Length: 530
Ligand SMILES: CC(=O)SCCNC(=O)CCNC(=O)[C@H](O)C(C)(C)COP(=O)(O)OP(=O)(O)OC[C@H]1O[C@@H](n2cnc3c(N)ncnc32)[C@H](O)[C@@H]1OP(=O)(O)O
Ligand SMILES: CC(=O)C(=O)O
Image 1 (cartoon, rainbow, N blue to C red):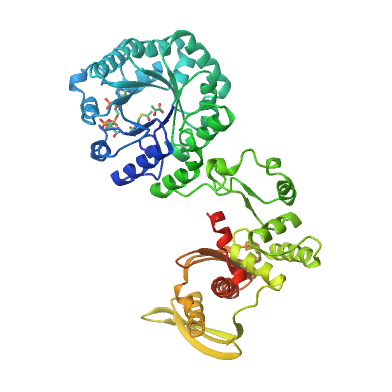
Image 2 (image 1 turned 90 degrees about the horizontal axis):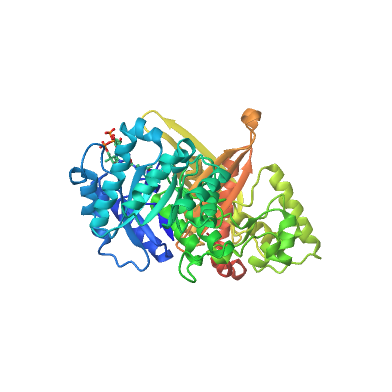
């Protein structure tokens, strides 16, 4: 069973703060994926979590059970007086998760109580909740550290929870420092003492959260607690976007409903969008680059059989294969790319080798085509005679004026040839690149009105050779979009205006090619875009 704690432990990660709406959206999406439990939050912690539990009741979930989280009662107090437990019951979930201390050091230092009182806190809390007919999942906090320091006591804590009626004993590697072989030994010992279903809750501080979770499953644990994309306190929790496909595809353990695995990539990306967290390109299974192939040798073999360089079929997890074209490309990368673009080229055509050499030469000058799909497509189509620029520059001037009261104003004057006609325009902008963009659009709108639908979404500049001082080159990457599509272009020069010009011109030409020339259609490959 997959127990997702993105909304509770995940939200303890730096930079994450879910609204109630966010939590509801994520819970629905996790249910759509088919996880067994969704831990919605800690009701005693804040009003937002309590509101989530009240509103999630109105949502019809198909697979997941909602659980609410809390601690054992306070030392030297009673369960009836405990504010956390009161709030927990207010959440009115059918399942609850209680964490209790299982490391003697924590009992002394963090709780400031006796070992016996901690055992009583566990007993009282679990039996109080069981008496109310709830499913009780007992998270033994710091279990592996506790077992290492005082195995008898750690086992007594599990025993207290089990005797009080807990339905699950979940072994937590709270500090995330346990190594796989130690974890294996500890779980093997625990199994000798308890017949209850076991779970695992691993943190990733030693980069072992996923592997530790999988080892626990091999040893018989039937519940894995983790978070989508591995969000969580410090270095995060076990990433269920890796655990689910490994269980399903490599360990033959069913943990989500039939045919739901292909939803995984979508769910992972959705959660990162709602969480407003950047995606990790190389994230296993679900990352945009998880099946991106760059080396020529790899792509050559992939074309013969994808199994040569892919451990699973990307489609199984809803991801897709991508081939990158760069200075590390061979003929195979180019042939693959050409096929995607419906370009009829073959390895016997001398131009094919010439294009690879041109790409390698340009990349050595600082261009980077793997992040500039549109510039690459223009280069290929130009090389194979399938494309001609839609306008030509005659000349361009940029004036920059610093005014005392009005900041900096830039003005670009531009002379172009379009359809054998000369067009001469000028436009102002906040800065030189903005003025250039405005002037170009002004000149071209008369001939190609559709360029008004194009927007510049992102503009990035990278200095390529800082040691040369003013002679350093810059690479400009521009991301543009219209209502249907988005594309990236690149320019490189020692002059930032020239580099920006190259990327801007590519961007406009690319859009015009797509709209006006049938060979420029990317419709066939749209599904391959992120
Ligand atoms: C391993 C984990 O991830 S556990 C989950 C951790 N998550 C969070 O802490 C997020 C939500 N937490 C909160 O909103 C707040 O910390 C609250 C509302 C729970 C408590 O707030 P406060 O009452 O102000 O206490 P504070 O946060 O300062 O300290 C935590 C208290 O819990 C006690 N505590 C810690 N673990 C346990 C436990 N298993 N059982 C009982 N009490 C516990 C601590 O001893 C401390 O009590 P003290 O104030 O008497 O020293
Ligand atoms: C319970 C929990 O979140 C932990 O031990 O890490």
